[in-house]
Image (cartoon, rainbow, N blue to C red):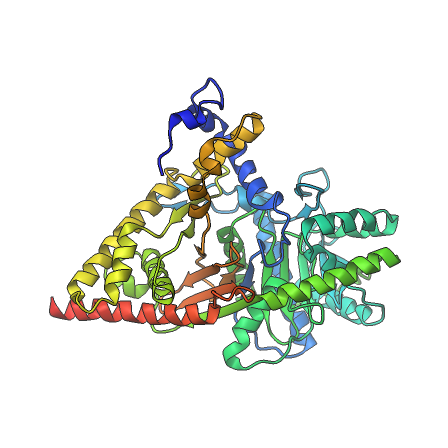
Length: 555
């Protein structure tokens, strides 16, 4: 597809490439947030908000749940102290510092619905930043102040006592799941939101949730499943709560950070995607997990603390109707998403490294091979790449499907091809993928540049260049494979929904000796099957290992 200067000559007298560069720092990150998230009218749950599945914990009762949650809260507050004092260590990639702005956007922030476009508000910016978190149990919301009067954070023991108070209090009152309203289509939720906050008490309660540092959801046990299905169930719990019968009402999906702790040992989080990408979130998770492993400090004398404030909601018949409709919609959505977690235990990132291959590019080629084997064709594939080498940089797209990747996938099952030729084609495909990734993270990609040109035309009120209305442009942007590597020191995996109705969402965390994958698809699409693709993926990874080992033996 060729792009001609003439297609863009109506943007302004200034050369459009020069103009987009002048816009970059000021507007491109805002344009990305708007177009990818805030303008979207689809529900945030499942469609844009990722979940993170942590390893199963060894508690099976509410005391264990409370203790774990108390340690988790203390760990997040410890991380927050680095944010507040601006002592968070700068991250580097290839010896170059990365922009740390996203870390300063995830705490004390919340998305707020609007009629056509939502907004994200960061309440940390102000003279008196909030000092409370929101705790949700049994569909009821509580304000928990997490700092003492001298500004010191509550200890684990203090937090535990406060959580016990919340747990006991939430059993004594009604449990209308107001939070499930946030799972709705954004226009529907926007109307319900305006109706909800007409009442002064409701408005104050909503503001308290929005302004909180983060949210902790104390979940009821989910339905029991086999060990084989356990991680699939927890991934669904993190993404959407399992439906209105289970924990979907135990959320405020607009809140940027929601940590989830189940009574049955399940734990993880979900986060509203607009303010940040995955890597800063899992960096925070790694810090919290490390903090929780530390030996607990010697207990200090307990100072009596006030009862956490229960947030009240006045439920009118109209609000009740909105809640019932949201329940129905959530149940449809929860049934619609197929989630499969694949714990690939045969090898990890050390194997491709031992063959001097990029683990990420190796995994991407395995995904290409799996898809080709399942459908006998390739498809547009999106891999997220970080632009944090640049100030306020978010992401660029790496298109994993290339001429070289297709040559490899076709050759892999061709009996007329020798193993040495197959291995050479794999090596070549990986080399090209690495080159494309290098270009993307260094600002040489095309996707965000095209986004800037499109948004610039819209803002300048000029006619949209022809390319954006071309069928081939729409086909190229229909990503059947929507993928991301979100690596973590913790043995966890992030999960998210597909980008398109007939596609897959695939996230992976390569550890040294195993790889965690999460694969999602929509049940309403007869052509997709997350379980089947996961099996093809496992087989592809095994076959690629066998190929390289056989070729190595003959050399």
